[in-house]
Length: 211
Image: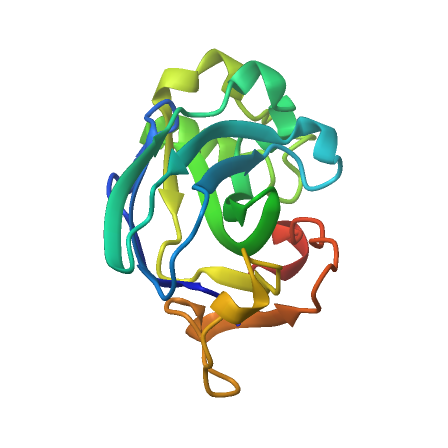
């Protein structure tokens, strides 16, 4: 079982502009002494079709970690729009908040992020371009690359998707005994725990699963 139990992750500046940094307040409990630091990372999924557009927004080393409840704020810069396909700037994508110990990822928290135009006229023009017969009417969507400062994002912070992985911590003896089936919060919505040594799965496809 995990020595680190995530008890809360709060998205502090949400909703916000596309160009605003992401800011999280993370609270976790450490159950046993750790020899090394924890590495937190935030990744932006630029395209559901090709992971080469993924952007690592920032990493944060946290340590030394005392036993007990710990809390800190993690800030990461906004993604570079120039590295995102224009067709994927508007709509739903995913950000992945992960934590690793000794280069072994043990928790992954995924959030859907919806990006749209803040200007009602641009939003209406974008929506109209997808209506039936729009092409015949000459209705075209605005170019989002020309309106980056006008884009707004909303992280669906109340619907995280959590995956946990069993890893080798410092020593087997250091792993605390926990009841079977216990989950970290907000891992009450967890997707399950992967076997020890299993490679993390690819990011989930928001276009396939978003309601």
